[in-house]
Image 1 (cartoon, helix red, strand yellow):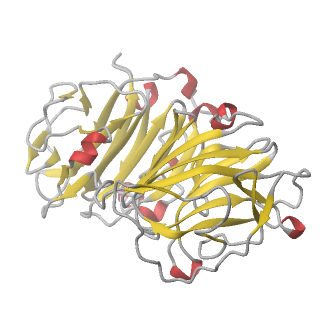
Image 2 (cartoon, rainbow, N blue to C red):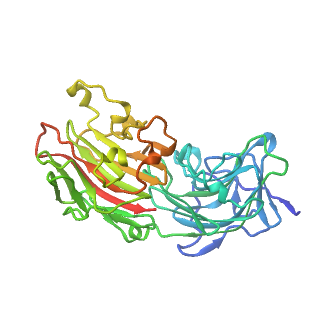
Image 3 (tube, rainbow, N blue to C red):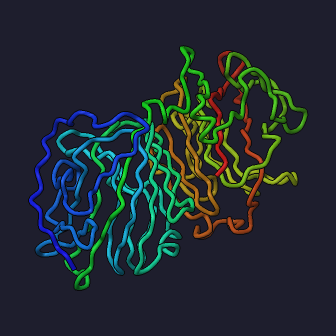
Length: 434
């Protein structure tokens, strides 16, 4: 085994100039040296040991189990990265897009390669979990090389990963706040002070190419606040659920009254008898985003995977609550259950970000990922919950007995008194089937 010890340069806070134009593949590792790599300049610097062994970058724990990252010397914003990774069992590693020093106040993200009991391969982490992927480790080839293809674009950041040619991860952050638009790419040794002898993470055949600045711009806001879908958005699989001018693709339950579409906004009217508006198409695994705003004493909700059998859609599928949290209990003299406030998964899980709801009359954004039994939901860029619905206890009926596919719906509970003729408004409804 050939081992080459290399003294690595340090990286100061200012980012160096770009090395190549978008579209050009560039080799990041020459197979012999660590030229072009540094061990400081990101969010998770450390004292891991980095060498070149058998034509690969090799990372091991440092003294006293120290971990750390090795970073590209050049920064990348929108990019595609390809590499082969070998992670011994049991050991923890990862790929880190857009790393910046802590002093910058900006952070990137991690694609986990945690190959240990209970570890996750393909999860998304950034000072906390954003997307779990407990099934990924079962697809990781033990004692062998695994091919990773990582695509990172946009603000908010969208990370897509393939492992050994098959999709592994597809996650778009719901907010760009606090996240870097570009930074170094890092490879990790996660310290533990308990790794087996000769435990290591190795990387080879590492190459990258920059993508255009607009590669992750899926929606283009107009002056009115209404989005226009870009070519990149369409290519990424996004489709509008609402055309901004009609109820095409939707159907009102009951007599269908109580809705109006105009100027890119879907309005829920005070007068009308329909209890909810539903998509004509059914959906199973998807990523959904929408904006909403409400008037005083508004009561609505977002139905997911609801059955068309005429039963309550909050229980045949599920409902994410929309409510005037600010006035409801005082005006009604009632006491709400924790899951009844805006963002709550009705009958099951409260929103842990209660202060994320904006004042009445201001626009809010829901982003929902529902894949299999895992539901990830955020309000205004803050994660409300990321749960396996089948593991929820004391929920009736259990989610395992609910529909796996169904309509997406918007609930209509009009308040008795409100200024004007509408009480809830929705816009920028887009869906991407997964």
